[in-house]
Length: 85
Image (cartoon, rainbow, N blue to C red; front, side, top):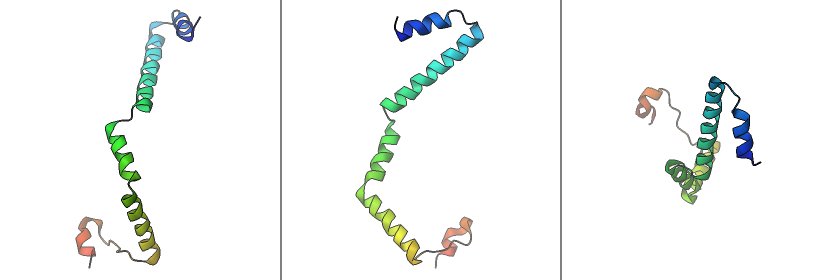
């Protein structure tokens, strides 16, 4: 007896409310598996963006700027441009 047959045999005696829970869980597992096997386009695009060497260099430059104190403090986040001199 394979796993699917064991699952079928096991759930046959469950009351209807519990069968709904089993179905919800199975649908959750299906969605989880689809996400793992085929990443969404936006996730793939994000991965490509962060893998870009120019982006990684910009992050490193930003870290160096922060360490060196080359930053602009924003006094009022609602008026960012007023803080930049």
